[in-house]
Image (cartoon, rainbow, N blue to C red):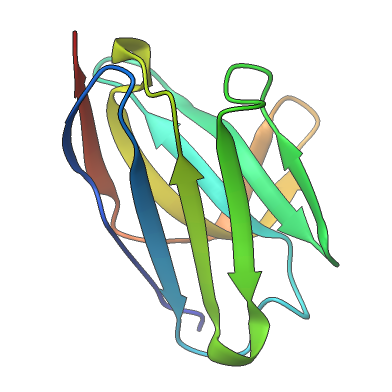
Length: 120
């Protein structure tokens, strides 16, 4: 069972930056698509970014502002978030084995989530 531990959230002003981290319990990055989702209060969990075999994909809402990076030997992944906006406020989840279920992106493994709050 893959375990994911995410961290790095916090409170930041609009235009600021945060860097989220995700540590995996075992070698996952060579086996699975890994990435990030977020969930705002009262809303569903939305795809943010994923990484697979050295290629990153981003939701349109974060493209150009967020960057995903991976250190496979260390089983660690980061999400660098720049130019943060109030609408980026959400709980962010590290995700493993991301796949498309026919309706939306989802994942098999989840971190516990880390809160990001962007003030205007």
